Structure formats: structure tokens, C-alpha cells
Image (cartoon, rainbow, N blue to C red; front, side, top):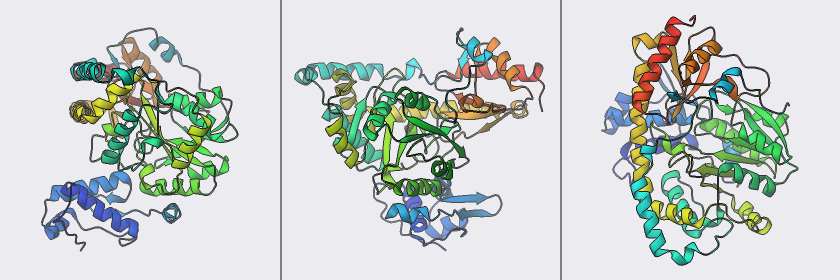
Length: 474
């Protein structure tokens, strides 16, 4: 029976400390691949803690890919693979828009499940305006000075403090580059890394990455994914140098990359000097189940991970403030090669956000936002779990963030989408995010950030009515 001393957990909650103890034993090889862990009840009794605590620790380990569960059997340790030891030392273009997509662009919606916008009520207008007034009063001299190319030191320092406390990333302000949107930062990266490299774009994935590569005249390859994330053998086969991925919550599939695939990916990057991983952590703050998934950057010891994040998900889609964290050697190169660029975010926004973060307002806002999205999540999941809707819909990948996949039990997903669109319900089919051969499936990507509970309830009623009365089901 595993035994840990839980008398001195530091600042960690009990389940976080237990999770870290088990994880560290797995990484150290003290608990081998395939080994069965104690049952939740037996483990809790042995440690003198609650079953809920052991269950929470196990669930976090499952989410990160350290262990897996077998119904009515128990929890077992995953095979992390040999890549861990190393890291410790085409076609182009986009599929044409369908008739449903074209029609959707011309109307307003009762509910838009394809939108990444946030509700107006969730922006902290009162605190933000108060912070702006304070900045205008206290920082007039700084506001009128040109910002360094990487952004103001105040904002970059606030970001590093946040990353240290909440993402376990020990980085310096020198490594942080602030810019107006991740697309702009991606363009800077291409200039920094060089036009001779080949960039990997996940398929399915974020379509703008291919467009950015195309606009900069660099070569890129689409790389397939499986249930664990990007396929590393394809990176090798297609001679990719730099790959863009979102391991904490893949877009659009919603999968979480397990630790075994993370180490395999890091191992791939260490094999050649000019290989890098761009880690897009676009909505990690909005994980609703368990603690946030650790970043690739936090386990990278070879300076191969370029970390990117944005405030558009947590503040507003119109707040165009993003940042990247470069490995130290790339940060040095950036200032030598690209320091002639001006920072594209105004001083007024930078100093306001810096103070908003430093005084604790951002953390309070995140807590409020997560609670709000948790209620919306629970509401929509409960609705789909009713006996009537269960026979028509199945939810997949619901726990990692604020979008999930919805499988519609229909033989004609195009007609289902068209019928919903006619009733002002906009849906985003998963096939839209694939490149190449037409993918036929009955799965939709459902983002629920842009609508209130009343809108969602109306939308789900309409969707049920559509499939129940209009569309043939399986």
C-alpha cells in the first residue's frame, strides 16, 4: 500500500499534494507502468483522509495521462514512454464554405455555438474603469513614453508573477513579448525562427495558422492527431521543424494531451537544433474540472517550447492583448534581430492590465468567470442528459474548457444544421476544421461562452424539436 506523509502540504490543498506525490513517484519510476493503484476507499483509509480527496487526486492524474481507469477494476499507471528520459537530459488552402456557412454569415442568431465572444455582463467594467482612472492619475509620465518592443516592464512582470503562481513557470520578464493578438506574435515568430523552416499545422486544428504561414511565404505541413494529440511520427515523416499545438485543451476536438505524448513530443524537439514546439495555452484558465493542466513549458529543460497565451478568452474577444514566452536564447535573438518593432498594444491598455493583475482584480475576475461558466456547463450538460435528449445527442470532451463536442444521432447532419440555421441556431460542424479530403461525421463543436442560460435553453429545445420531428435518426 502506498503511504505518504500528509502533515506538511505547504500551500497546496490536500488533494493537490497527494496528486503531486503520486505523480512524482510515477516520474521517478517508483510506481511502474501497468501497476495497479490502491482503491480510493482503501487508500483514503490508509492515509486517514476522505475518499473525495483521493478521488480528486486520481481524477487529476487521469486528466493529465499519468493513470487510467478500468470500470469495476481500478486505476492503473500509464506507460509514459522512453521520451521522458531524453527530455530530462500536402495540400494547401482551406475547404470551401458550405451553403450553410454562407447563409449563417447573413443573419443574426438566437444562439451562436460557433462564436468565441464573451457576454457583456461578464466583463468587469466597474473595476476596469476604476483601474483606468488610477492609471491616468498615477502614470501620466509613463503613458506618454514609448513602450519597449516587448511591452512595458510593468505588464511583463505582472505576467511572469501570474505564470509563476498559477502555471508553475519560472520565467523572466525578458522572455515575455506582448502583442496585439496571437496572429501578430506568430508572424514575429516566423521572422525570428526563419523562413527556411517547415511549420506543422494540426489537422483538425486552428485554420488561421496555415493562413499565417501562407501569408509569410513559409512552407507548412498538415499533421494528423489521434486521441492523445499530434502524431509525432508524422512530424518526422513530413520533416516538420516547428509545430503548433494546444496540449491542455486541443481546439477543436477538446482532448487533453497525456503526459506520455508530451514527453514524446519534447523528445522529438530535442533531436535537432532548429526544432521547436509552440504551445498555445489559449483557454487553460477556464478549465472547469480539477486543477489546471501543467504546461509543456514547465517540464521542458531543453529550451524547446515557445509558450503563447491570450487575454481574449478571459477578458473579452475585443481585448487584443496576447503574449508569448520565448526560451532564453530565443529572447536574446529577438532583441538583437527584431527590436526595431514597436509594441502593438497601447501603453494605456498595458498599464491598465498590469495594475488589474497586480492588485488581485484579475484573479478575482477569473474565479467569478469560472464559477459562472461552471453553472452554464452544468446546466447544458444536465439538459443533454435528460431522457428525451439522451436518445438524440451525446456529449464528448466536456471537462477541459468552455467548448465540447456534440454528436447528433442523425443520418443527415447537413440537413440538421440547415434546419437549425433556419431557426436562428448557428452550429459549427467538426468537419469544418479538417483540411484535405472531406470528412463526414455528425459531430459539432459547441462553444457556449457567447450566450446566457435562457438563450441556451431555447436553443436546446429547438434543436431537440428539429431532430425529433424533421431529421431521420439512427
